[in-house]
Length: 357
Image 1 (cartoon, rainbow, N blue to C red):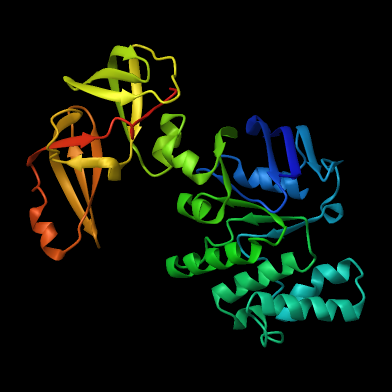
Image 2 (cartoon, rainbow, N blue to C red):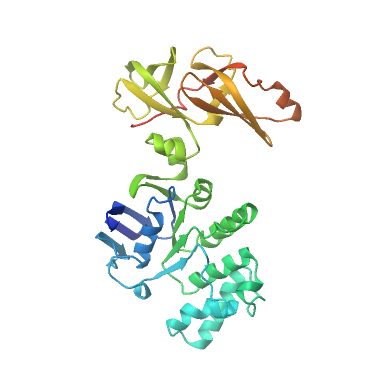
């Protein structure tokens, strides 16, 4: 794939606080790339550096082979969708969308055609004369999207644009964004703290923590092959366990975990220390497994039933794990263990992931 954007060794500090530390990654032409992480990890600072709204201390930002690190925002070929939409309240929908084109001194006839086309694309034909306060939150989000897209940028930058919408509308809008940009040829960088949103939208995800890249990969790679405890717990809320290394032969290792012998698959032949951390997703655990191998014993502390999924909080000796159990019928709830009941938790050795930390 052709690389459209390359970021090399980017760092940024605010006083004594280093917001970004030696960030390097690339985004291919037409790729939907998400930057994911908790609040304060540097996501928005990175986006603002790419947009030209912040000046990095070190590093380079290259677009289509051109170093744009020090270019002002109006000289960069990108559209920006802000978290609060930043629409002009006194302008109509059409005027808001046309604003960027007018700044670029596009001929009037072309402006009218582009605005008409983009309104149809985002489903707002007929709303040209309305003001922002006459629109719903979802419609305002579409106007912000149309205003950024109408200038036909090479790169679209999104700063948590769905965070102000209710849950149902967020799901609808992320589907629309994915449909609009899939196959458009426009590269997108989408900043969010919401793992589900990043996974639903993106071809590739970069996870940040404290201004440092933790892992870059497809949503499936981050979910099923996390590198560290932080990644495993942030992505999908994995259970993190630790055991003493007993034996390591080829691809399989045995650990002592809570006085039980557990077998794991060392898929990447990582060099292991005496203590080994590993992760397992709640839905990969089996309640009261009939197989006596790879089982841990615990006490049910609490149970949550949400629709067709039961979440059991099981206390092991010094930590608590979560087990997700699918319920196919209402009477399935009656078959669940009770609080304070002793249970056995089993898992497939090949589904647990050994962590680098």
